[in-house]
Length: 194
Image 1 (cartoon, one colour):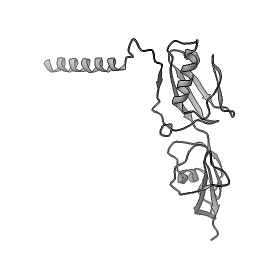
Image 2: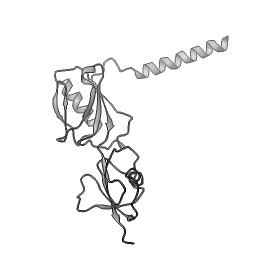
Image 3: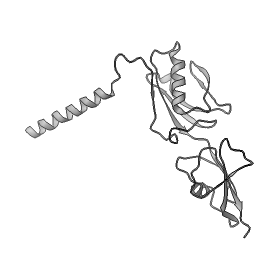
Image 4: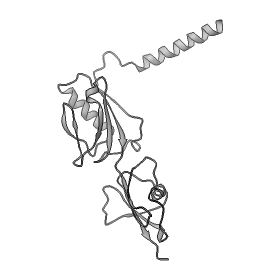
């Protein structure tokens, strides 16, 4: 019996400590931007058109929804209108929305932005099924070629080139089969001459 009472007291103590750590101090005036644990490619990923994000404004269901970034790099946000977000990281978008909501709409908005989906990548050249494919974190060129149906008989497994965003298409870089991909990458598998 004493052992059960002791376990209950310990459990109560642990729960009360956890609850006090999770509470926001009463005098806090600084807005809170929660950083999502979802992959945003080491926190350095800058969003681009065709990426999808989920914006949560806590306590404001009408302001919380999923957006796909338009071709001109914007989303249309309730109350705030058109927001230019292409080129920003998820945490920067959180701060932008918080700043704009504090300007006459909400006293202390709490905003969380997570990346729901990335723009596609492309595989061309000597693969069975060239085209665009859904980007998933952790993709390598090997996996991308597999998604494109594998190499053709004429494919050169050593002449694989990649063009990433911000890089000139006229100067693709040579890539290795296990190199990682990023959203929007264009992979070209050259033909072998043997």
